[in-house]
Each structure stands twice: as C-alpha cells, then as structure tokens.
Length: 103
Image (cartoon, rainbow, N blue to C red; front, side, top):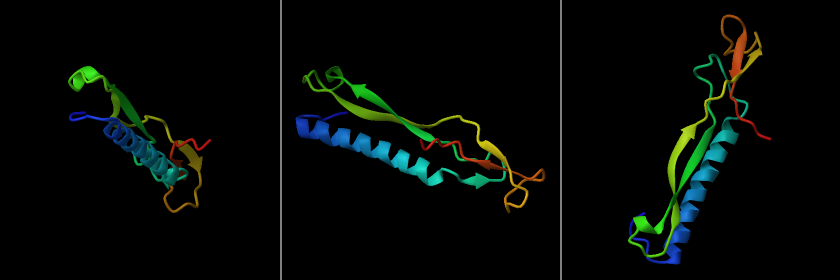
C-alpha cells in the first residue's frame, strides 16, 4: 500500500478489497451443486484473506487501510452422492458435489 495520500485512495483500496470478496462469493455460488466424477476434481470453496495495513508501512501519515493478502481454497471434503445414472459417475456409481454451503 504505497502512495496513500488521502481518504479517497483509502476508500478506493477498500472498495477493491470488497470487490475481491464479492468475486469469490460469486464464484462459490456459481459452483454450488457442481458435480464431478472424482474427489480430486471437486470445486473447493474460496475465501479472501484481508490484511490491515497500518500507517507505519505508508510513511507514518496516520492513515491505514486494507489489502487482500490472498484468496485461499478451503479444504473441505465434497459430498459423495450415489447417482449411477449420472454421466460423470465413477465406476462405483458415485459423483462428487462441491462443498459450497449456500446457507
């Protein structure tokens, strides 16, 4: 977070961080209920990790803000569903549904 001189730059960076949050939510919702033929192929939900950036990193201006440190995949086991007629079912008749919780 270099070159933060005023409240408008802080607000812009904060809005950018929130856009990342909304994009990960949209990606998770778009992949909710997606079924694949193996556990390894199943979609893993995403979560943004935010980091507070204090004024000591921006020249002691008294300003602070937020940055996206990373977007990480949550390591959740997909649902194993017995659907032998599904075109993606494995040899045992199971499909794997993404572990996105939409509630």
